[in-house]
Image 1 (cartoon, protein in one colour):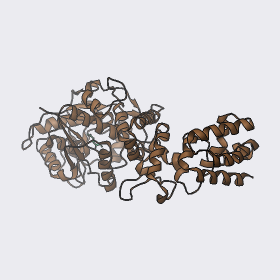
Image 2 (spheres, rainbow, N blue to C red):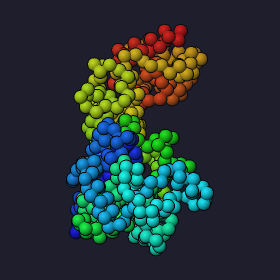
Image 3 (cartoon, protein in one colour):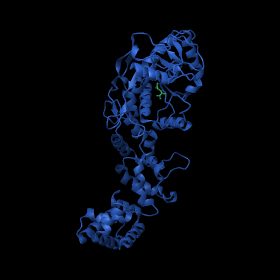
Image 4 (cartoon, rainbow, N blue to C red):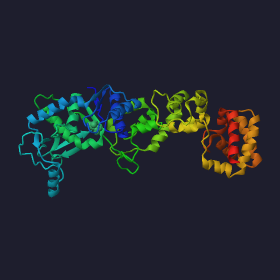
Length: 479
Ligand code: GLU
């Protein structure tokens, strides 16, 4: 039997990196075993759903290259099945009606010191009505054991679980049942999801088995379960939606490559054999659920950034140029990052940019760093870093001499990186500055900052006229 897995996100917020990891592990498992990857949007929480978040899920999966074989199906299209499951469980006596309010439950729990629902309505045999919820009657004793493919054998004593609500008085069927009814219908063989859902699993197993015994319900094999380790931050705390950078969209916006992101996500709880850098095909080839770790995985943005830099450096120049496009010359009709290039679109020159690529490709770790590196080529005006201007020009008379002499010499020399280099060595010697320090005033005058791509190649790209204009303007500025 080939496996059928599903990714079942709820569109109630930004696409979380944890969801991205879950979707990737499902996808890798399906691709590794020639199985089917089903995408199901669990959209029944109408108060918290938003269309843009639903679209965000599809966009994120598409960006990551995680293609689905079935779906996206919507949980809300399956409401009749959820209701039918409730009726079947009711008919067979697995459920009972309960009219306790939250307040009553809390008061009793406070009085007895035992949290959770105390089974108050279990034997009251209430009629169903507009004010009653339906609760699942837990077996009186015993335990449910799950043979989790990641966590091994996990046992949940029934008395610790308590009778839980499957349908609210409003008629809304809650997540644990709706989710498993959909899994039954889709004949899911492996449920691979985050560890936060482990406590729900015994409830789902009991309901699944109960449904198998209900008239009018099909008998469906219980799926295997695999609960993936939690993602934690540097303090080893669960990633927080508010404090940690968890929105996958923001990584796209900052110029992380999907290939690097996929590679990094794969390392969150698992490690490919041949080393950490492993492209999609290798990940598929090696993925093994039984090797997934039980320990929490540190979501380390520094490591992701480092990996992204490695992927950027390994790209063929043309691919790198293509990847940079939304940052340097966005297509108005296509996807674009939130930051706009610091120049007018008509000043962008694709030929010059292509020539600048060898100077910058090895120096950036994200695509969002690219515009600042080449802004001196396309910017309408030099954006001066005040601190740099003060240090190397205003406060250092030798810096101004370097500029004045360079203005003369650069007008005469061959305007190539090599001749510019030799000329500046001499200029530096004339004022008693080593080349490194003689470069600083020129760089600040021309690019506005003290850091950037190699200076002489940059000047060559900028051309004689613009270089001289900028040297002159900087001199005027500080004189
Ligand atoms: N919609 C649920 C969630 O996003 C799905 C849980 C599951 O995979 O079973 O948490």
